[in-house]
Image (cartoon, rainbow, N blue to C red; front, top):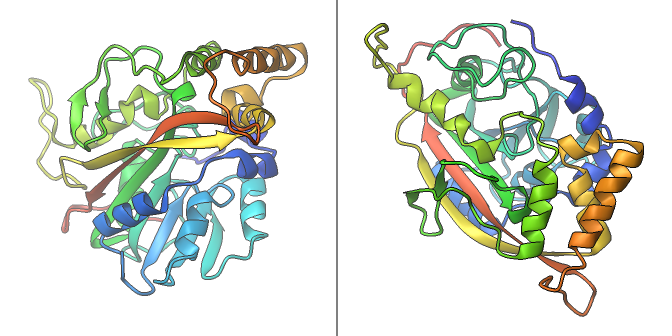
Length: 333
């Protein structure tokens, strides 16, 4: 297996400064809750991997905490790492790595967090192998962290009983167009989703349609496929028998909360432009998308404040699981 960064990620995330400026951060109270579930809240100098760290968002929140965490920010994109390193965050080590190949010793970290890397489709893995648990998103460089190799690598670096957490900001304009997926509702329980997760406003629904018109068929959080690599740890059928030796505990712990965010129209466009499937557009095609976005922001149901900022709606969704002590792990790193 060879780890590479796809052309889409290399070009789509080349403007690390814009990506950094226009991506949302995470509510401190939700981060606090997630860290408690990962059993590192209040633990001084716990070693935490921020997987697919990008330019800063979750890494900064970890670095600012009173626990003085020892943070390892792993990302395969050179310009992202450069932008993060330039911030000179305390106790943060920025390293080149992939989700299926991290330059870390086995059983050397207390927790791993993957923030947002499923929503925006950072292609952190290239794998030609067949999944140990019978599952692959797509072949070659279209795969994501939800593969057997990735899960085994995360398990390898965690201490026995260490925890793996995932967190996403899911804005109304980027949620599923039509999917029978399970959605995490506001009370934190899992429910059977309706046919679509409807945006709060009509103008955000229009933004969603614009985004989906450039659907690149790459799996993201909104497709809900990432769950399969966990669920299929215990799968079996008439032709295959899967031993009950999961790497991570099931069911996954889950929670969510609504958020409202205010941004100027220009910042909303830059935020929209930072989406990987939009970031790769050029010339007239990009100009046409920009015209549609600004037209949507001129709708009658757009909420605005006296500073000219527009109201955006969404959910922050988070989940966690524990590495099962004693499960077989592969050598490497």
